[in-house]
Length: 522
Image (tube, rainbow, N blue to C red):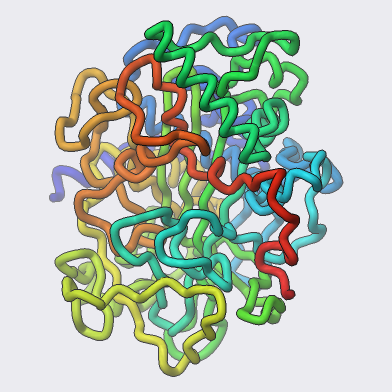
């Protein structure tokens, strides 16, 4: 073990020599404009801006760099008064501050939420525009997944884990303080532009477009050509944007990438008493979340604990997942100015800093791997279990973070040592890797799925499915509306494998307008 950590310490010491002084707002070893997401693996900007070809087969380390650079750009401070998603290049990343106060709003928080985009079609057009909140306190905007979900409609969106048609109930997670984790989903401007351009906010439009796509593919044994200009016939279903599409040309430089979808998990920060949280180790937000009667909770100090990123680039679908370092095992980072907590946030801990171990990654009321142990998903009309009666969920990580991922984590944690983001870590990525195909993952997009890991799971967002589960295995079940059966893994049907469940939230324009908005009182 010592032989593994020695190169990490040497690398961190070398990196530290080049770090700026605290508060300087400069990160010289990051890309020149770290507030802009990389366009693709090894490529910061669109080809017409900087003519650099993306390698056909990048190394896995380059994919990890891409994931971290995306994470940094998404969490760059938002430019107050700017458009949704607009970063402020004049501000540094959130600093370490051990006071119980919220951090500045960041880019991804100003993205649109699915329930804002997928309103009834009669309520369109919807504008990207300005964020729907101001200042540092905001109402959380968790996903309101209503159509076609196997375990009922959640009355309090954001309590249940953000799954869709999973093979197990995906109810809430209760941390060691007896508080529910809360989740939310946002989507980027390129994804919004795609939905707006082709009218996919309307389920009927999706149905017709998919029908025409399948007809063309069957007649011609090939996928229909995508629209390349506003005048093209776009009546057939169009592929998700990779960043090269014509309808993205007019977007600002910080938004000229393929689609991005974010899932985030938050925990309530305990501010006093035994085992109080250490605020400086979390990105913090004052949040209000929906209650069963449609009202909002009191403003509550929350800390970010989980972060999924799903990106689409010319290289392909690139999902990655991050967590706060103390979720399931207390970690002391190099050059750490803050104390370490006495136990992890999601389990009681073991001796010293050793993590707790549970066979399936979770334990509820002392039981694991037993039918009925997983908390049931809340459904509309249910009432919240009182805090004193909630069964705490103990969580561990079944699949260790790969060593090569840990190397890259130490690199970026050292670069960001004066920022709260140094308390976050990449768990892994899932991407095609032509050098190391993974036959255990089954089919993919396109052909056999390739990945560096078999199980890629975020302990805050996929707590109960840590074995035989990954981004690909879940999102391979995502299609637009109108797909009658699982499409074959053939190139002609590749564009129907959208890998995003959000299009399923579109409502039919022929259906009546709902009596209430999602998550709002009757």
